[in-house]
Amino acid sequence: MTNDQLNRLYSKIADELDISDTHFERAETSYSALGKYIGNHTEYAVDVYTQGSFRLGTVVRPLSDEDDYDLDLVCEITDGHGLSAKSLKQDIGTILRDSKRYSSNLTEKKRCWRIDYADEAQFHMDIIPAIPLASHGQDISITDKKVNGEYSYIPSNPKGYAEWFDKRNVITQRVFEKAMAYDEANIEPVKRYGAKKPLQKAIQILKRHRDIMFEDSDDIKPVSIIITTLAAHSYGGEAGVYGTIKSVLETMNSFIEKRGNSYFIPNPSMPSENFADKWNTDREKASAFFRWHYAATQVLVVQSLSIEDDYGDLESALGHTTIERAISALETRADSTVTALAPYKEQSVKVALQVLHRQRPPFRLPKTPTLAITAKVTEDGKQYAYKNNDAAIPKGCTIDFRLLGSTKLFRNGYTVKWQVVNTGDEAREANCLRGGFETKPNDTTWQESTQYTGIHYVQAFLLKRDSCIAKSREFIVNIQ
Image 1 (cartoon, helix red, strand yellow):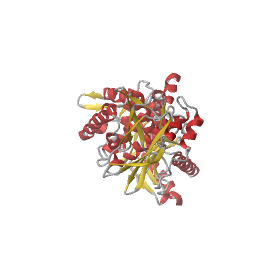
Image 2 (cartoon, rainbow, N blue to C red; image 1 turned 180 degrees about the horizontal axis):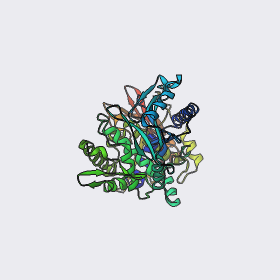
Image 3 (tube, one colour; image 1 turned 30 degrees about the vertical axis):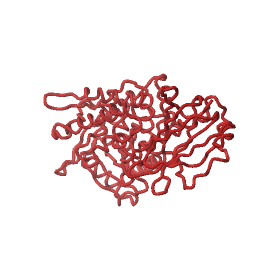
Image 4 (cartoon, rainbow, N blue to C red; image 1 turned 60 degrees about the horizontal axis):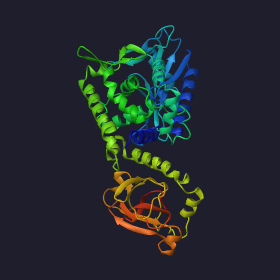
């Protein structure tokens, strides 16, 4: 693949990883209601706001439908300077326990109160009690419960971090326009962020790779704040998501400081805080990060350049369904160019697609195309790629078609039904309009010759146990 192709593919992968508007709006409604409830049931002034991936625009879908989104909220008692950490934590807990709506799903965690919402909501909310660290500025003190049951305050600055990230995420108008060109499918930008920028999308992909790599070892997986911070430090204003991932992975480790034998990744909004402090007490966490970094570089940067028609490595790294949907969306977008029409007018192709001799499939079809077709023309001994509805090619050539799709679809035996449709006077006079189905088991290739002037096309259907599980769009071949 070229860099441009990878930028488009990775942009679409990030779109597939993003939270849906429905889930986001549901979480936003719940967060607003919770903030209002706490404010109405305390004598103090309260400021409730999001932090983490929801605030930064880097949230990713859970690995499975059984997992939840994690929404982090800060509940800052802005006039609570005299409150002890224990009093603050318990006061917020009491307010939540007094609610019929929240009490049954309430659990105390080390630094927060967690509310697990109903299964259909698919998220839980962590409410972090806090007070201002000083009389001015954005620094806060958040509650922390020790193993021995004692409470204390630790410093934080989520608002300052979000502002720093936003500055690192800024791109010029020229770069933004180029990024939007890679993001062709994003016709309606996600409401809550506008159009996602390359850094946000790159972080989403890096986090998903991390999630899958450490699915069975959650205790040592690299934490999101480290990946996000190092990625933001490393971002060089690239327009494409692949280019951003490549740049980030090449340079992010240079922002990990070594102070003697200790690792240090400063919080940009509070330099005294070390995001890598647990690396120094548990070296396996540091080792896990560097193993993840190497694996991500290999599959997302090095191996991706050799992708031709096998997405197996990306599927293993980022998830089968995610890659399948991304490829399908890209191919749907690309195949929509049949109405742009190389030398032929739009109406001509529409007529060709509706000819009466094109037979209806004798099997139920899936709703959307999930397969793609590539083609190579051999003309006078020379071979070149041919795009869907490309410029007309001469008679006497050979066209080799290949069906592309998720490798999972082609496992354990399959049958491809190829439908070849010719149009035009020459094919009609030769009694070769065709339009039926031709079968090829366990093979994704098909070959045709160019014999008749006109607009012709092929379409492929993938069957298992006589059921059609996937299909392509029509691939149009123009012959002069």
